Length: 626
Image 1: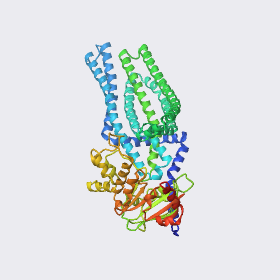
Image 2: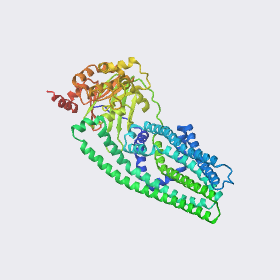
Image 3: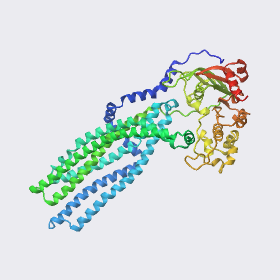
Image 4: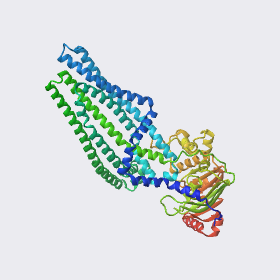
C-alpha cells in the first residue's frame, strides 16, 4: 500500500479551488433562471451602453472603413434632398416656364445626376458593409477566442459553458456589426428625415406630424420584436447544438466507417429530421410573430403616407399650394416615408440586438483574467502529490480521493486500474490542467503555480489530436515558442519511430497529413500514435505524461517502443497510464487506482508477490495469451 502522510490541508485554498471549479456552473444556472422578460428588459435598459460599446468595437476593427460607410450614408441623404430640389426645378420649368430660374435641360440633368448618385451610393454601401462586416467579425471572434483560451479546463468541459458558447456563436457574433449598420442607417435616415421635414415645412407644416404619427407604434413594435427574438434564440440553442452534432456525425470522415458498418445513418437521419421538425414548428411561430409585427409597422407607415398624400391633394384643391410645390411635396413625402421606414428599421435593429450584445458581454466577462505565462522548471528531485482530492462539478463522488503519489526525477511511474478509476483525472492534476480541491502538489519540494506546472510538463492523451497540418507542424506544435530547428525535429521523430514514416511520404516532414482540409496523406492509427509521441518528445520538459501511448500500436511496435523506454525519454521522468501490463511492468513504481483511491503501490515484482488487485488484473490479462 502507498505510504500516508499527516498534514493539515489549507482550507482557504480548498474553498478557493471549489469556488473556481463551480463558478461558471453557478453563473450559468443563475443566468438561465433569469432569462425571460426580466433579463430582456435589463438588456433593453442597457441598450445605449451596449450600442456605444458595439460602435467602439466596429470603429476599432476598421476606423477608416467606418468613416467611409458614414460618408456614404451622408451622401445618400444629401442626394435624396437633391432629388427633391431638382424635381421642384423640373416642375417649375414644365409648368411655369416664365418663372423658372433654370432651363428644363439643366433641371433634368440635375435630376438625372442626383437620381444616379443616390442609386450608386446604395451599391457602394453594400460593398463597404461587406468589407466592414468581415473586419468586425474577425475582431469579435478574437474576443470570443480570448475568452475560451482563458477558461480553465474544468470550466471549458462544463455543459453551461458549452451551451453559452454555442449561443454566442449562433446569435451574438454578428450583432456588433448589425448595431453599427443600424446606427449608420439611423444617422442617414435622421439626416434624411430632417431635410425632408424642412422641405415639407416650407410647403405645409401640417404634413410632417401626419407622417411622424407612425413613429411611436413602430418603436413599441420593435421593442416587442426584440424580446420575442431573444427568447426564441435562447429556446432553440439546445436544439441547434444537437442538430449540429448529428450533422458532424453524418458528414465528417472520422465517423464514416463506423456509421456504415453499423448502418447507423438511417436512425441518425431520423433523429435529424425530428430535430428539424421541432425547429420548424418554433421557427414558424416566430416568423408569424415577426410577420405580424412587420405588417403592423407597414400598415402604420402606409396609413401616414396615405394621409399625407390626401392632405397634399386637399391643399392643391384649396389653392394653398401650386402644382410644382405639390409635385415636390409628393416626392418629399415619398422620400420622407422611405427614410422613416429606414429609421424605424434601424431602431428595431438596435433594440433587437441589445439582448444578444448583453449575452456576448456576459460570456466575455465570465472568463477569468488572462493566465500568467508559466515558467518552465527543471525537475531535479521530483513531483510529490499528498492527499490529493478532486471532484468534478455536479458530481457527488470524488474522481480522485486522498491520493499520494511521487514521481522522482528520471523515474518512470505507472498508473493502472480499471476504467473509471481516476487515472486520467490524476494525470491532469499532475500536469497542472486541474487544480486539486484538497491536498498539495509540490515540485522539487516547493509549491509551484499551476502555470509553471503546465509549462514544465508534457501531456499526450489517449484521444490525441490528429492535426490537419504538415508532419513537421504536427511535431513542433507542442512547443510553439521554440524554433523548429531541423535537428530537434529529427531527434524527436527518430526516438518515436517516425523516421520510417517520413520516408514513405512524398514530401517527408513537409507532407500535409489528413484529408479533411486538403488532399494530404493519411496515416494508420499506429503511425498517428508515433507522431503524437514525437510531439511529446519534441517539447523540452523534464516530465512527460503518457496516457495509453501504445493503444494503437501492434505488439512488435509496442515491444520496440518499450524495450528501452528510458532511452526514448532521454532521461526525462514519465507518468505512464496503460491497460497493457507488458508496458507498465518495467516502471520504477506502479500505483494501482480503484474508485479514485490508491490501493496498491510498488514494483511489478512486489505487487505480484502481494497478490492483490494488480496481480489479479495481470494474471487475467496474461491468461488470454496462454
